[in-house]
Structures are given as C-alpha cells and as structure tokens.
Amino acid sequence: MSGLKTYHLRITLRTETRVVLGEHKGAALRGALINALRRHYCTAPLLSAGDPARQAHTAECPVCRLVAAEDLSRTRGSDIPRPYVLEPPLHSQTTYMRGDLLIFRLGLFGDAADLYPFLLTAVLQMGHEGLGRPIHEGRRGTLSVRRIEAVNPLTREQVMLMGEADQPVTAEPTLPVTHELVQRESARWPADRITVRFLTPTRITANGRLAHSAQFQPFFQRLLERIIDLWRAYAGSDPPLDARTLIEHAAHIRLVADETRWVELESTSGRTGRRIPIGGYMGNATYSGELRPLIPWLLWGTCLHVGKNAVKGDGWFEMLPQDEGGQAWPLLST
Image 1 (cartoon, rainbow, N blue to C red):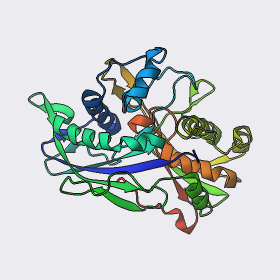
Image 2: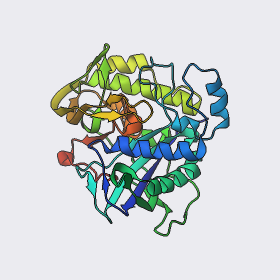
Image 3: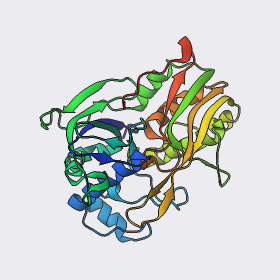
C-alpha cells in the first residue's frame, strides 16, 4: 500500500418525529449506528481482545471491525484503534422537532471505505429504528436520510453520494485524504504560530494522568502514537516519520494563549450499562515555535482525531492560521 487514506462523509438527516439527545451527541449517534450494523450484519457474540476466535471471526465478518467495542483499558498496541471516527453536530441544540436537520460526519480509514454500502444501509435503518431518548411511548424519535456527501476536510471539496430521493448518485466514497495531499496543503500554513481549536472534548493522558490543559508536547505525542497505530493497521506500513525526533522537537513549542476549558461528560455503555467518562478540554490553544516539521502531522490529526473516545467524536480539532486575522474556514459539519 502507498500510505494511509481517509474518506469523509457528511450525513444529513431530517427528523420525522421529535428527537431528544444528550449533551454528547456523538455517543448517541455512534451507538445507534453501531447497533444498526450489529443487528443487521454481525450476529456473532462480542469476542474479547484475548479470544483466539476474534481474528478468525473478523476475517469473515465485513463489519466486525466497526462494531467491535473499544477496549478502554488496553495498553497501547494491545488492541488496534477502530477504522473510523464520528464527528457530531457542534451546536448546543439537543431537541430536534419534526422537520429539523441533524448533520454529522464520519471518517473512514483505509479499506473501511469498502464498507460504505453496509454503512449506507445502517444509516437508513438507524433512522427507522430511532435515535436518542425513548420519548414516544418507549420509542425513540425517527429520522430520514436527506443527503450523503463525500467531503475533503483539507480542500473543502464536496461530491454528492446520495441525493434527496434516497437514490445513490455515486457507489462509493471519493475525495480521499492522502499523505501527498497533506504535504501539499502543509505549505499553506504558517511555520511559527498556529491556533488549534479543540471542537469536542479532548482527553489526553500524560505520565499516567489526565492532562487538563492543552500543553503541546503531550497532545502531539498522543497524536503521533495514534497516527502510527492507524498507519500500521490500515496502510500496512509505518508512516514516513521519525517519532523520537518529532517529539523532542515538540518539547520546544510553547503554549502562548490557552482559551480552553475542561468539560466533564459521561456516556453510558449500551453493552455493559457502565458510565464512562468522556470529558476533556475544549476551546482554542495558540502555539508558537518552529512548527514546519509538525504541520503535516497536525493536519493528519484534524482527520484522525486524538486521544480517547475518538469513535464517539472526542478529540476532533481544527487548525486556524494566525495570518490575515486568524479567521477560520467555515466548518463542514454545520
């Protein structure tokens, strides 16, 4: 393989009956989507990371890598990260009346894009089965799919995959993010000062403890580890980087303005019923220093997310240049 590729979908749903979500909309969306996949495509019982049958089953099940539960207690390398991320709506709205639009995004890594037909059917089924709290005599609010688009988060290009009539326009995702594209886009960014906007809670550990501020080196080190894990799992090779040199370089990048805040959130595991902490820091952090060798990997991070609970939407960030007034590009998710 030539390197990691990611494909990004923007999914627009319209509520048919009232939908009520919790504050962390990503957890509800991910749960509904994965439950639809599991019910319709993966009927085998969940297999633990140490079960020798897991590898054999995964080889036969086309969606097992998507529906498999994350092992939150794993040590790095003991369980590969899932080949997708979910990017939830960023607005504060949690109640959607009939006719409202609910828009979210999915990023698919490597050959997970081949599962697009399964995901399309699962999104349609998710809408029929319902989403959010059971407020309609024990039933959840229902939705219909209005559009599915391929989007490229770096170039802002868009291609319609499914239109208003629920008829596919294009059979598979397009507009991939590749390392060649990332390198080309990196040249557009300033080399000495950037602002990172943490759009969703970012949960980073440093020296075995939660990082409650957006210091650059712990954030960047966790990002590199995730990039390496994903590249090995879904590109079949190591990424073209020297991790030790980059992490040492990251130690010299200064946090010069910290406008982040800590957000305490929990989600409930549908499998175990346990409450899982998914909070983290959100907001803007401005960094200064010699950033040129780090920019490509930060751009990759905007597509891959960073830290824990990425499949539920955590760790999603964008980069804001500090030239021309530091204005952000419009978010594709809104």
